[in-house]
Image (cartoon, rainbow, N blue to C red; front, side):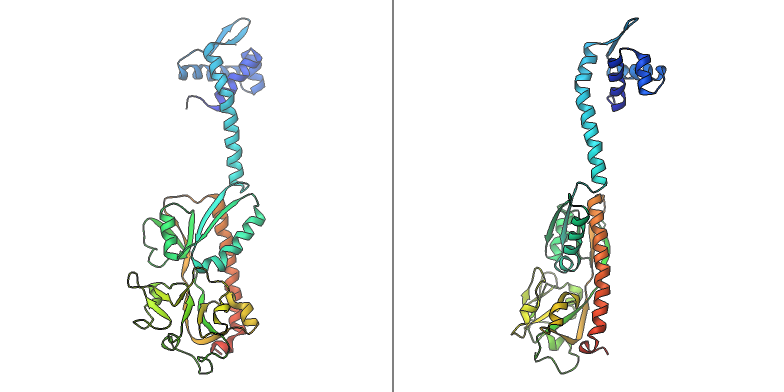
Length: 322
């Protein structure tokens, strides 16, 4: 590069002191090294920057022009280095993330709160999408990374994936539901009642009985199971079961308060597993803010697993596993 911060600082020092020796002393370099730097600057620009005489050195018209712009260049360079440091230390920056429905409530929101507590100057752009849309958003470079179902995408050369959540999902209903008191129930039994859930990927949908039934239907375009009550965000699920025969698909930890209050009951029998993870472009580096956010999500996911295991032990009898 022709104009560098070092060359500009050398020229400024010579101009300030009017003498190569004094300038070299202030810069803590040798006079020959300083002379070589200025000569190299002049050679690179193809013009003379300084007039040298026995009484000292003065700027030529070209030197005056270089310094006129040079001060602004040095200021911008200092500002750039400052912002790079702030970005690396998470004092500034933005993380743009798209979540599938279940990851958003399992770990996304909690991890975001932790991030802001540690780095209050960061900005977060969080969106909850159908898990299929998350992949499209990442491919369109509208999010730094996504957290969604990764089945079928792990071999896509455009994407980097990391398995994150494999949580057991169970079916829940209201106390006194017709399904209860009859031992473990099969999926065929459960499909006789409407379900409230997000759409389920083909790997799960393949286990459902064919055709339409009260629980929902299979999407002919992609093989997903579309529940009778399709939810974008699985929050306050217990409200769907109150006074109805609706079944909800969730984790024990997501319904912990409702279980404690006796508002919902697990139906013994059918379970399935989530299989979601991080997904981002293979060729795009993860920013410091996004990387820190991913670390917080991993930590919350680990805590969720521990909580789920604890609740499974607590409700072992109701789950029909002990």
